[in-house]
Amino acid sequence: MSIEFWTWNTPNGRKISAALEEMGLAYTVKPVNISKNEQFNPEFLKFSPNNRIPAIVDPDGPGGKPITVFESGAILIYLGAKTGKFWPADIRAQVPVLEWLMWQMAGFGPMPGQVHHFLMVENEQDRRYGLERYSKETRRLYGVADRRLAEVEFFAGDISIADFAILGWAWRHERHQVDLADFPNVKRWYETMMARPATRRGFEVALS
Image (cartoon, rainbow, N blue to C red):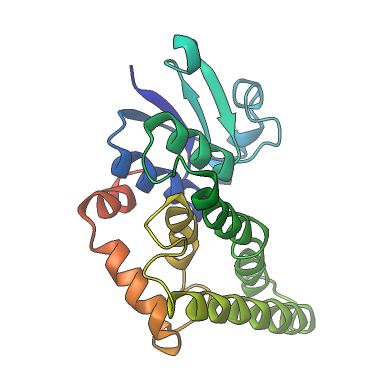
């Protein structure tokens, strides 16, 4: 049975589509058109109470019973644990995966997301302040990533769910007004990830 993947064509949605493809899991896309506020539909709110995409329904959950999971980071951990792929069994090895996953969830997502927002603000004064503030923080985070990737090939050493999480937002670097040439280690990592056939499929599959 395939996993129901409730999503839209956003960075957080692309994290999961890339992971599903890389893990070789069967899934069915259930588009949630956020431009039409479909994330507020009662059917979706039953298993995504924060009215945010993505969310999944796995009919073959633990013990063979269905399970629902919302929040993209939680979904990645669940899928990694379910398949044993891109999620190490050793607790010590899990720590850097969790560190960089939480780094993405807390910063490298919310901050560039604010850049997206302020680019659309019509009032020049409001736009200028917000764009300056969040663009500066977004570039700082790219710098953090670049320094990390100067030391390792992937964020946790070996490729992991953390890479899929971060890739979903790095995919929007042009919209962040960031030139990856300014961050050569991120550029190398980004090109390596996007060259993976399964990851590429995850970014090409229709989500909307």
